[in-house]
Length: 83
Image 1 (cartoon, one colour):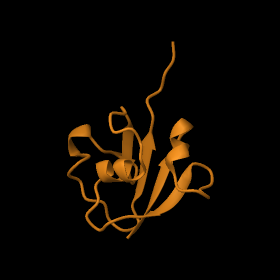
Image 2: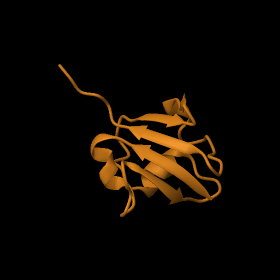
Image 3: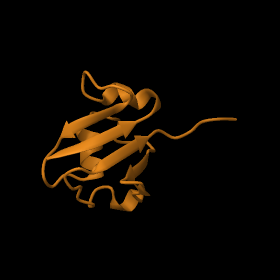
Image 4: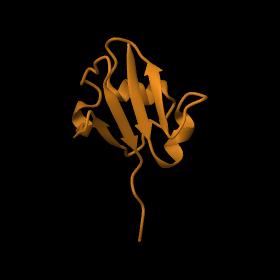
């Protein structure tokens, strides 16, 4: 199945080659979870990401169990730093 993955900042480097604008359509397994997408793309698993599915935040406790659906949009955003 295909989903759209959006990132920001340096996480764009983990998207497949040829991706434009920190966004890519990605082919994934039928039973994949947000955590599975993070692992599939090779993002550091210990990252403190904000994960958003179809405009709604995915709590950290649900990232390994929530099953994605065909056509979902998954945004994975790095933590903001400032001072």
